[in-house]
Image (cartoon, rainbow, N blue to C red; front, top):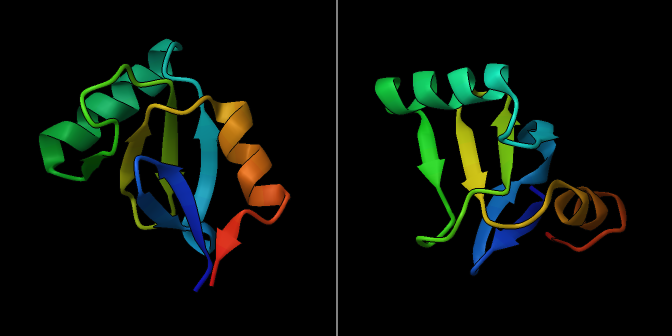
Length: 82
């Protein structure tokens, strides 16, 4: 299992990530609201503004305070803990 830091000491299994997107678009806002309503949303922002939404293959949605570019860089550049 490869873990990627999504901010504030929170980690997500990198192998389960389907997409890292900005929360500004209306379809993404609907995905987040649906996940919140069904209990599949995980808020890893620690009270800060949501800057990226991580969609997992399990149907879970992780909210992060880090920018999507920062997260994708961590995933591709190997800032991953095994």
